[in-house]
Image (cartoon, rainbow, N blue to C red; front, side):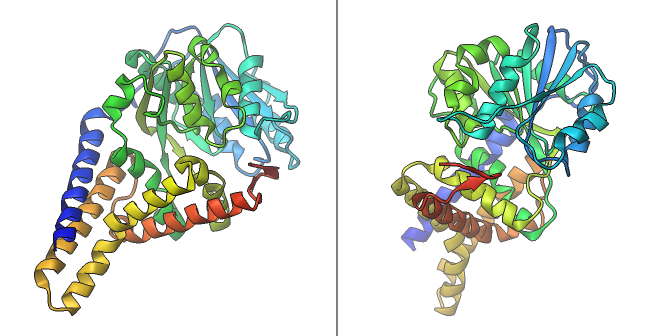
Length: 376
């Protein structure tokens, strides 16, 4: 009974922390028309074999409003599926968009950091703000202007307005909401913004807005050339250089469909989870903790009812309900789907644990790849 009560207290505290983050400290850029006069803003879009899904992203970029001097830089990073032809067809004669041809990453570089660095160093020198966008992101018409305004209002070097993650399949609904839930539950947002500690950092590379001077002072993507989680590592580099970072709910500014199928989702998480947790011992401890807090309680409740221990069962069910509540709070705060998805939160944690195990296993066997390139 003592262990179950400890679980109740721990999950209650974490859910309360989720609620405080979501309702008090999470930045929410305006979704209303806004105009910024901050000089040239460059939107940077790295592409590799994105012909089948880049069109909505490009059309949304070309439809941006509120930034009088907007430049759109697109890099074709060795695509073999006609991505560049799609870009030309969508852009037409719009002079705001420039299509660049990338070069293969040199030794010591991973593909995405190298593509982003090429864009950052080849864009208009007059650009004072850089906005990195992924091909699976679709922005609302004033998204870039609102993000730049929030960057300036926060006094930050880097702002990460996290997009609304679109979920369609069972796998999506089990795994994708964990992204927002994890940082809302375990990361103190207020402390993250105020503290200079690089370890207190979070960012999402799908939509990332940076002050160019601060970005270069931090070393840009060259400082994270070999990092799988280049977005988080870039945020840490900004802090090391004396800059500030901020995280925002960008669900009203951008939507993102990250993966089209279970194999893509599985492999996408597999390539990076080992980098999220670091040492295998730390990963084992974190996964064990998550399983104890969020997966064990409903199992304990069933076992306790079968054993005729209704008090223990009630405490375990309360723990489960608190975990579900935390997941629902996170979903509502970030434009996600709360019900009935939150009810299967224990299963989501199990899937996350399996993906983490798979990530370390394949990394040890040197079999991690992404888009045809080795990850580690």
